[in-house]
Image 1 (cartoon, rainbow, N blue to C red):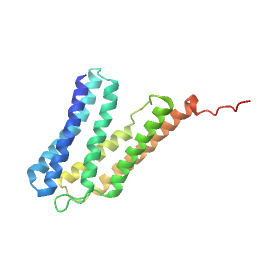
Image 2 (cartoon, one colour):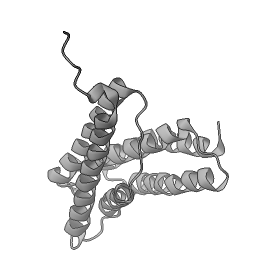
Image 3 (cartoon, rainbow, N blue to C red):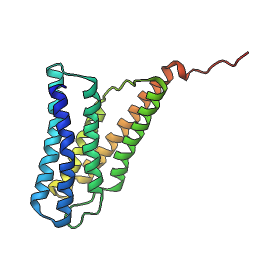
Image 4 (cartoon, rainbow, N blue to C red):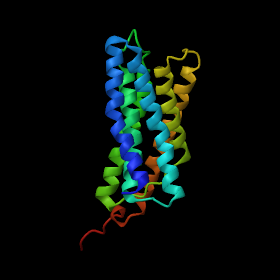
Length: 194
């Protein structure tokens, strides 16, 4: 259990607190709950960079970390996106459903692809792409924009950029998976029995 993995697990443990604070806020509109939700989301987002830095700087990369780090990102972002896609008026603006559909659709597609690759050929090779990292940052920015109650001007650009990067990264990961499957011997046609 490396330090980087402990930070990642701590990030995962923050998610229920974030969810509960958002739910308390949209129920009664008490600003303390919004600020606690915002601080928790921001802290968990910053810890994403911290655990990656620790893993690289102190050579603490591990298979557990490679599994937990993206899982922590997905759990945090999907919980934020789903909560903010609900009608939380008058307290919070609603995320557009096309944004939610893009984020969740890509993650479901990637999960199904991972299962197919794993069942077909064993452990898949996952190469993080810069566009995926940009998509994650922009998704976090969209959630923070809503929680900060920033003016609507400019939000559509952030949401559109996040959705575009999310979609492109999904296609890129899908092509990686297809390439891995195509290169594996189980993908070759078997000759008919004579």
